[in-house]
Amino acid sequence: MQNGSLFGKLFDFSFKEFITLQIVKYLYILSMVFAAITALGTLGAGFTSMQFNFWSGLGGILMAPIVFFLLVLLARLLLEALVATFRIAENTSILVEKN
Image (tube, rainbow, N blue to C red; front, side, top):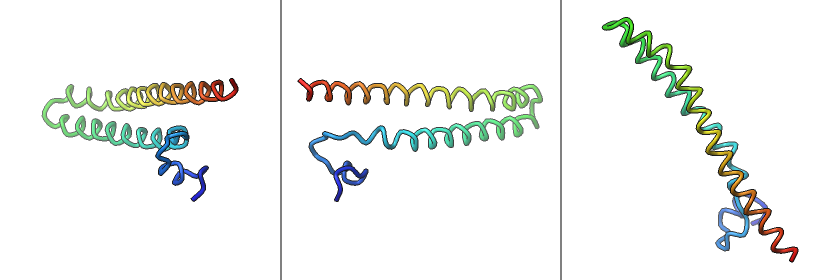
């Protein structure tokens, strides 16, 4: 098993290598899929609600893109904070090794 591979890093019990920076793009894709499913659910609920109350249904339909945007924005902000934290940790360990 290579130490540089994702699978090798996964079973590194010393935790000297971080895998978060390698999988963060996949987490972002998953969060975008989740946001799209949530927005589609909001859209579907708006169309269903429109049968009983037009304004409530219209509000649900208009909220779907806003829900998608806010969920993607929240995921991006959280993942960027996570990446910044791990990069600080990597840079700190490099500085410690130099001294």
